[in-house]
Image (cartoon, rainbow, N blue to C red; front, side, top):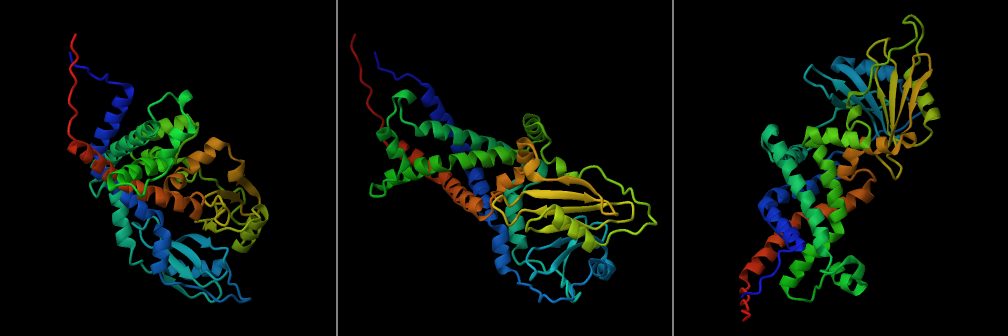
Length: 385
């Protein structure tokens, strides 16, 4: 009778890893490649953008005067002030009904001269990369679930890859000398071995980051996943998009209101750190002042503190990121965690390298598979009984 090998759990995991990888390789390559490109989108675009700066003087114009000048362009929605006084003010103006996000106008806060921000030469390229990353350039109803399914497969591949990285021994019997070969690439070996090590070793080093990208990326693909994630975290993911309930002023309309300079002074007092400040421009006298200040000069660059200030200077609410429960901090940082912007250049560099390696994994994996197909099958040994 023939000596047949048992179909073990490890063999099953290997088959799952192999066939899911082969079946989704092209789509995963596209998603990972576009993710690599998008990692440093802001930095790349800024390198091709015209550098605009202002010359600081003692004549800092009132924000009220600046918004009045822009009123001819449309409804002034918000003002962004950089901690760098060499940078101009950025106003978001709703120029028409369809312009929901607003058009950006750059204004010299010392002279009042303003210009509409010119489109970046790379805007079209990065928008294409974004649509390819999220929807494969297909209709969103078709492309989004395809990318979502591919992301689930990628998650399974990352987990099974970690399992397969460990040698075929029980964990309690593993020794360092058995693990050590999987942590380095044998550059002096034959190209097949080098390709194998590039897939296995680099895949192992980046697996944790790829798992994080997959788990967070699914929030954009499936509503059920967002609901389940919100239930697990105990707070709504993307819940802050609506801006929360509208708060009306308790100050009578005929009473004098704070000016914007006073609002900024209160903000600096309540939030005494350097960071980009975003001031929502109230539409009328019933609205309160809403201010966001970003910790973009700190290590945790995406953390944001918020203030609601009534028209008489009363601080209605003070929302400090560091004082929020951990689950709320995680839920509000899902986008930053997925994109790698959470720790600025430090996390972006790690994500860029991880995405670049992830782009290579389908290629090196297929090469490993093809090399195994070329091997001659071993002769089966017959055992007489």
